[in-house]
Length: 417
Image (tube, rainbow, N blue to C red; front, side, top):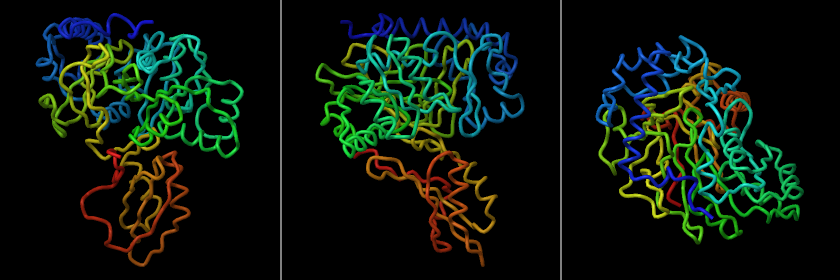
C-alpha cells in the first residue's frame, strides 16, 4: 500500500517551487483580467514578473480586516471570487462576518491528503462531527473523505448521546472533528456503557491537539493526527506519522499553496525558523487569495519530513498575531466583544478570557461595571452566546482590576502540556 497520496508529494523541492510559481503566474494572468478588485488590491502587477518568493513578497498582504472591508463595499466576496467559476456552488458565513465561497471540483479544500496521511482509506466509514451549519468546517473534511472513497456520516455538532448511539450502530473506523469532542463522546459512552471501539483513527482540526489529549486517545487505541485549516483556504498543513503511528515533527504544507512567514504587523518575510504570521497564497481559480494573512503564528522548519513528503514544514499553530482567537473551532473577533458592550452600557471594561478546562476550551467574559451600575450577568451571558455562537460565562469583577494592556481577548491556554 502506498505511503503517499500521489507522486506530487515527493517531488524535489526545486521542481515543486518552479511548478508552483509557473501555476501562480498562469492563474494571475487569468484572474487579474477577470477580477478588477484583485487587480486593484495587488496594485496591477505584471504576472510574468511574479517568478519567485522575492517578487511575491513585493505584493501587499491581505488580512481579515481588509477582506471584511472589501466585502462590505462589494458583497459578498469583495470582487475577489470568480462568479462564473462559482456558479452552482455553496457560500458560507464565518464570524467576522466573512463570506467564503466553496472551491471548485472534487475535494475543493484539499483535505484528502491530510486524511490519507492520517490513515483513512477507501471503504472506511467516517463519523464527521464538525459543523455543517453556516461555516464550511464540516464540508471541508466531508468532501475530502468522500473523494478518498469513504462513507461519511455528517453528524455535525452537539447532541452527544445521539452521536454515541450512531457510532454504536454504524461502527465507523474513523472520526473527524475538533480535538476535544471525541473525548466528550468517549466519556459519554463510558457513562452509558456504549462501545465506541470501532474508532481506530482520527483527523482533528479547529483547535489545538494537546499532548496529554493525544496520549489519552493513544491509551484508548485511537491514532490521532491533526490538520491545520481555515475556512478561506482549506487545509493548509497536516501531520504525518511513522509506522508506529507516532507523529513526525511539524506539519507538512499542502500542495497548491505558497506559505510565507512575515513579521507580525508587517508584510516583510521573516527568516526561516523565526516565529511570525503565516501568510498563504492559494492556486484556487475560483477564489485566488494572494498573500492572505491568516493572523496565526507559526515558523518554517528546516529540512523535510521523515515520511518522505518533500513540501515545506511549519511548526503548526503557535497562537495569534492579533487578538482574533479560535475557540472550539470558531474564531472570536474583538469586534464581537465590542458589539456586546454596545448592548450593555453598564459595562465599563471587559476582557474575554479563553482557558482550557479538562482538555476542552472554555471562555469567561470578565466585566467591570460602570460607575453606579450593576450589570445583569445573565443577560450579558445570553448575548455573549448569541453573538459568538459559543457557550461562555460572565463574571463581574472589581472596577480597575482588569489589566490596562489593551487586550480585549486573552488566550490563557497552555499549549505545552
